Image (cartoon, rainbow, N blue to C red; front, side, top):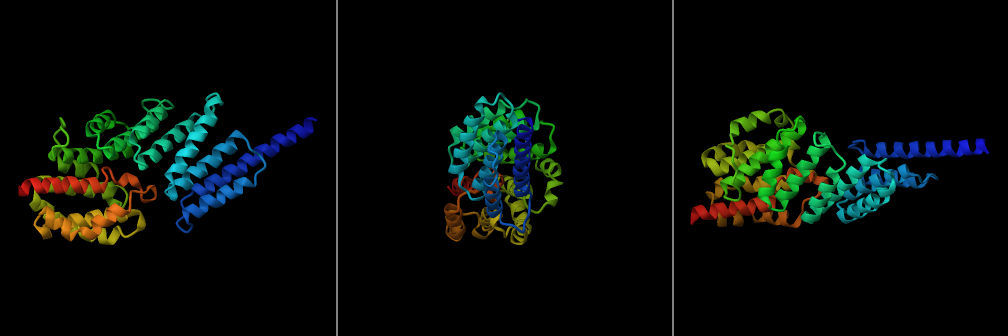
Length: 325
């Protein structure tokens, strides 16, 4: 009897380890393999396992969430996260990190579905599984700020920024430095009142290391710089735009940065139309239509859009129209 029981325990343990192996193999970055195919194959491997323990369910859900994000099926992501949150309720706190993860991913899915209130509540629930000084807590602060900015709730975004800007984690401090630049642009356009003086030179010095990366955060850094120059000094904006145009043509040609490429192309047209809103809409119609017909996708690193490019463009056009009037 004891031998048979030991065998069952060993088989269950090995099944969990095989499942864990498939998960980590799927999560490894490998540019040679299609992401969706990788996650789907890993899920198929998990289905062959005989063990259906709690860990197995968690591993399976993790893969389903990642598959949903890379295929832009956010409704399915939300469904999986809700199911796992309910499933883990009676597991006596043994899976706190996974509870945090599923609440966080539910919030991201709802953000991408533009259910901003639901997303905010999901992030708040996720915060219950972290301590106030942890990396995960401030990461949630970043997503909460992003959610408020996407919802056009700029005062809430500014308050969240103030709560998190001094966190001790360099990667997150960089994100909040970039967010501060966007908030400054909103203050120039009259959408927000802030109690800080924004210094562009200091901002560029703080983000200088990230500028070495030609994609990722560097895209945000450049766009925020252009927005500040557009609001403060059109002459410097014109001086900067030629280098940015060359940068976008060289580094933003992939599917994951296409929306950033189209938005920068629109900004590059501003000097050519003498900053006239009607002329810009006419000359940039192709890129404006592309932004409208290709919504933000998690596969394109949605965090690049601190404020959705569509809304940023409308804010810019409103400001240009006021100056023409």
